[in-house]
Length: 303
Image (tube, rainbow, N blue to C red):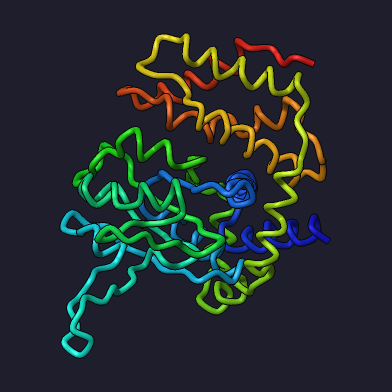
């Protein structure tokens, strides 16, 4: 039943984002691994459509925030307003209290506003006026960002990038996919493709099953060898321990999607670029991809 449910989810998302099965699988992998997803691409590539499709398919409470340069942290987290009737400050919850939050064009907001999500993404809670508020479960952040060479963008700091388990890029559609989109993409067909197929409670059960996927010592040693190589390479900083955990969780989810209860080196290789590139990227636009390819080519799987 679990595998059938996942296949239905992937198939349904394929109706919203045509011709991108690999990107859809990676997005579903991130959800099953309890991670947050960063989608980096040009405007109009389907980033928001994919996010809305995921929220609708999972039946999650969802809110989209359009990040702008004048946004404040309170616009995301909420604010305490004094109530004359109660004669005290009353906290009004912000959009972050939904199960899924779409931070659209996150790098158009100032670093101060970007940092408002750090505690929420890492600990699934926020602290306002010294009071801790726990967020919904499941809780999942999808953020989109435009390429950094576009006007009006603020680069995400390393601490913010490290909170995202995976980063994907959708890319231009193939000729066949774009032709199909032009023929069939209407508001009616779009809405028909967004029917709920998994409940949030079922998602939590699936996430528990993913956590039980096993990884042998040989596979773990291979993962550590990849991480060690990234730290020894000529970069400002290698993959962090949080990245190691994220890589293992993503590999387990990828194995689970492919109907295995154990991780093989190919699972790690399949998710490595999405987990690693945004963490080891330097000032060069293509260095992240070049480094991830170098790492995978330089470290042999240990069987």
